Picture 1 (cartoon, one colour):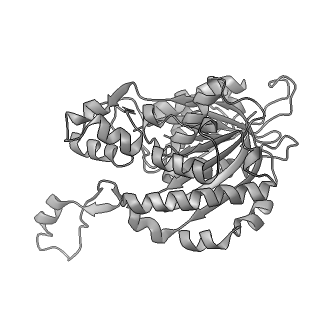
Picture 2 (spheres, rainbow, N blue to C red):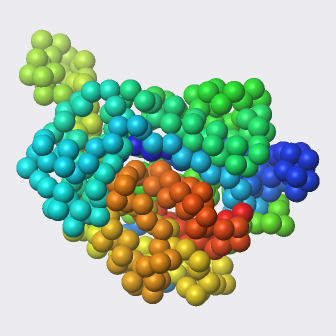
Picture 3 (tube, rainbow, N blue to C red):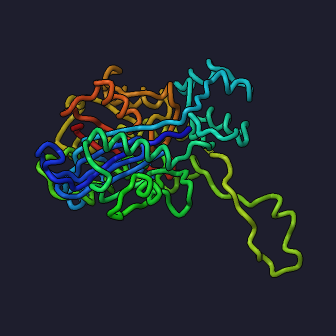
Length: 386
């Protein structure tokens, strides 16, 4: 599944933002505007030994946090964009042996939006959809196009011009150009000041990594809305969730034709997502609550201070289990998984954009956000909207 969000951090004249402090905004592909300090703009876009860190309590990130986040970060605008083509569970049941009941009871997903060209390998698309609703990436719309649309929506909400952007971050694991898609978003937005633009690949933790990265480019601000963060990774857990390169079978059959052994090198291509669902579930429901609690402790807050819990939209069972462990009531949990499935790095800002535009999330509300997934990587941040 594909979606985009935007997150912005520009240095705008105070007159641009109704005489408020000039912000640094950071934009992400569901459009997301974050106002990070004075006189700098950022745009971000997105379409560890878990056991060791779990046992350690408050992580070493705490000591790094004070050195890293001594700048302001205020979220002032958001936007999102999704492909027009919508695929329901019933549609998938016509491709493989499954049903709406089987998928929805195990994942909470009923629909997803996909980039539409042709269904390249329809079967593998269906299989990925059943696996916790992982990304479905097809194409006639484009990821850059969606990210640009989301970014424009975020800029409009924040009342900021493209030339006020200082940084563009593209948080995705499916770029349209392996050398990076962020510069293409910068061009599509019409940024003439050549802001720094680069991609971040952290799969479903991408938004949190992008948020923290964007905050590092901001200036000091008295209106800092990022109270604390907690980030981790565990390379050993990659065996439970990965998407690795494999040798092309046809190429291997051709052989080297008597040439030097190993040359020319065999072509490689990405295989399907490989996931041990049970282990990923155990990892998420154990490490995510601990990460959120660590971030709350660093912020000097507790669970009762949270207005909203916003998790990566991977699987409804995971969302429910984490909320239960944190004792957050269902009415304070943001979820749009049923309509979009797992959109990877875009899932958190996509859900936040809907909640802001519907009036659920109001300025001043405190949100505990957490992303988790491939790597394994996971992280949390305590943020204030507006």
